[in-house]
Length: 332
Image: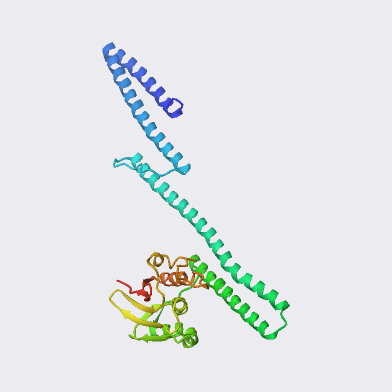
């Protein structure tokens, strides 16, 4: 404490005041009065020194706490139930350090997720690229026109897969960055379902998939383009995990809390271990197909949640899966 200039100045001031008051009291009231005054002032100075020492100890504790935080250690709770400016300072420091720790952990987690995502993207692009390179080599050496057409068809399929993957990743990045413009409007659920199913009609017809749409005449408030995109990704997932001559059913429901579009399939179902992870990017469960990438459902989830909605799923292996696309009503 003696290294502190302010503390030394206060001690000097106490000493000077004590000497002056002692001299004045001796001259006016005698030696006993002077000694009594000096004793009181010395006691006051001692009390001040003890109080200051305790304050220094508290400050040193805060310094040690901040050093631990800067070193990356856990953040203990230093708050107390006392009143005063030091207690307020402790509470504010704890809030600040807790926020900083959370931000540090979030940044670390984001870096890890980014590294994993880049690895997954590289892996997903590598497969079709390798296939295209092989097809190119075969095309260069093949003279039979029918075989060349077959190779070109395979190339086109792989290019379509790459294009879909890249476009989906771009859409996900736009949603994450908050750069997409969602135009909410009241749209008939029937119109959304019709537009979402249309690209799959030929595929369902070829595979003899029975499709049923049950209308309740409800309308939902959403962005038409992006909501159709979400529904199409769910339908695509259902068809990928369904055998030929399966059944796809889409119906509607409404209650006091939300309106929902229900998509049911008679596919292979999702295991209990996988169902909690199906909306995670690049996650592929044990029943995933060979062409599965694992981002279609993640995109659908991001689109719906960005509109204050949600997607709930229930499934039973060997029976089928049901997706509930919910749009919550505004509660005033």
